[in-house]
Length: 234
Image (cartoon, rainbow, N blue to C red; front, top):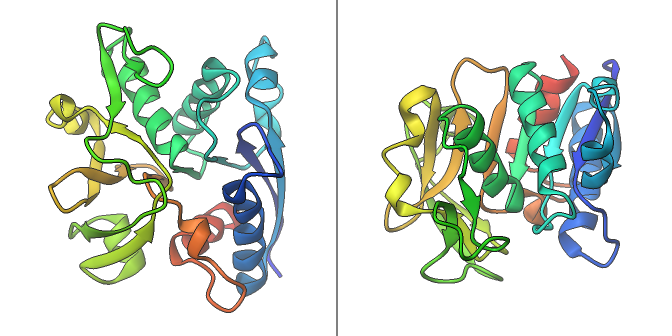
C-alpha cells in the first residue's frame, strides 16, 4: 500500500448535499481501488481566509475544490486554489470548483483584478463567470475531449458523458483569453463551451464543470479521480 497523504477539500461541508457525500465516497472508491491511503479533511472556506499565513494549507499534499458555491468565503477558496497552483500540488476542482479555479487564474495570472462571479456580484462590471445560457442542473451532457491533453489521456476516448449540477460557467467573451498563459481547455460542450480545463507544466491541475464524483462507485471508481489520487500519492 502506498504512502498515506493528506487531502484538503476546499468547501463548506453540508451533509445534506449529495455532491458533498459523493465527494467523500468517490475518494474512498479510488483509494480502495488503488490501494492507497488518502486522509481527506474538509476545509471551511472562512477558516482558510482567516489564517494570516499558509500554516493551515501547508499541512496538505493535495487539494480538491468541492461543489457548493457560493462559498462562505470566496477569498478563502481562491487562496487555497492559488496555493495549490503555485506549489505544484495535485489539484482537482469540480462544479463550483471549476468556476473558482477560472476566477483565481483570471485575477492572479491574467491580471484581471476585478474579475468576478455573477452569482455573488451580479452587478459587477467584469463578470468572468456568468450564468449559463441553459441551466445544467440535473443534466447529463456529452463532452468532447481534445487530443494531447491530460483529460484525453485519462479517459482514452474522444467523447464522454458526465453529470452536471450547475448554472454558471466561463463568460464566453473570455474564451480566447484563458489559454494565453498555460491554462488549456481540454473538454468542450456541444456548442464549444469549456467543460474541462487543465494547467500545462503542472503535476495535476484539472477542473471540471461536471461532477465526476456522482458517477463513481466502488465497482467503477472514476478514472479522473483515480489519476488525481494516484498523482497525489506518488
